[in-house]
Length: 164
View 1 (cartoon, one colour):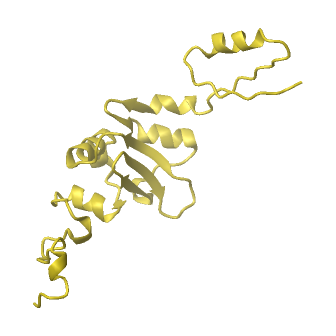
View 2: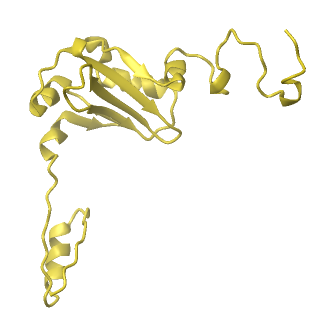
View 3: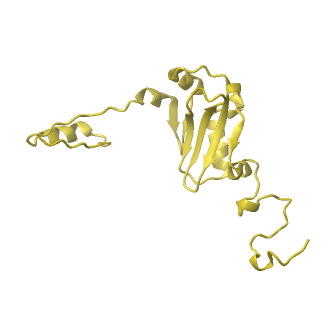
């Protein structure tokens, strides 16, 4: 007897599995999503975010003291992620926000409002690009985004010629 494994994320997976069982020698096992108990703590607008951080922490078995957690924000060209990291690394990271909207100040501002950052005041940790966006600095060439630096990184012909 051959065994086949199918990952079915279709909305009507019961009809799909009953259709597969019609074939001879076909057994179907359905795996339920284990994180359904945590879905109640998340909402989705244009950003998927945790609406009740205290409730999520309680469901995970953690006591939520905001001074023991750090908000880590990571961005790329395609997504923006916000995760709570425990300061002593005793607990695993807790995702609190995700967005596939292009990274911008408005997207980060909305995410911070949705996860109620003003209420918890976690320290923020992130890369230079994230901090530059949060501080409202002009992006562009992130390697030289300091407003004090007057060196033009695009003038390649002048790199070893110009003296200050």
